[in-house]
Image (cartoon, rainbow, N blue to C red; front, side, top):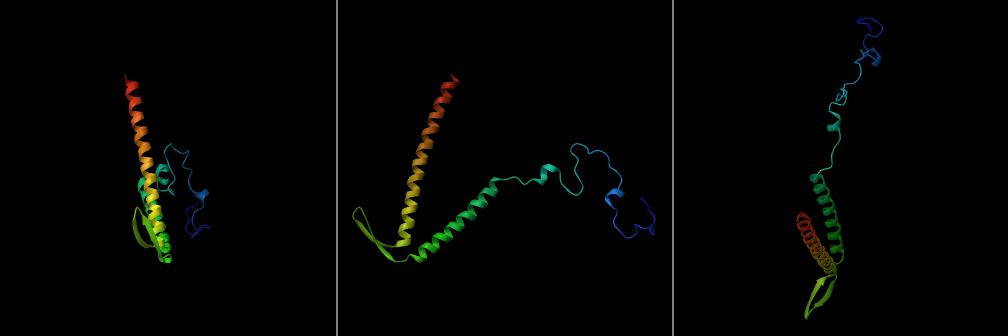
Amino acid sequence: MTTDPYGPSAGREPEPYDQPNPGPPVPGDYEVADRQPPDLKKVHFTRAAAVWTSVIVGLLILIVLLIFIAQNTESAAMAFLGWRWNLPLGVAILLAAVCGGLIASLAGAARLFQLRRAAKKNYKAAMR
């Protein structure tokens, strides 16, 4: 390695082999080019990222539903337990889907309640 400013290597970047040998890597050491320790380079999946992802997916689904409702504006006659009314077809189908989702959610909530009650009973029995 020369330090002559007028030598053959003047005006160029030093090659990697021109650099002094730093020796063996030290545990926990990292290269200067990384600028961060190895555990900070990795981006971890967080709950906030999951929320943002679900919000974006939800907004895309809402856009698709709005297009569906806007294209199905023909009126349809509805009847339920003696009540009669007219709704746009898109709104009626969306309402049916929402009611189906609510029924499925109620069934799931009942099952979760049942499993939690059984788990609590088993835990109390095991602690005796």
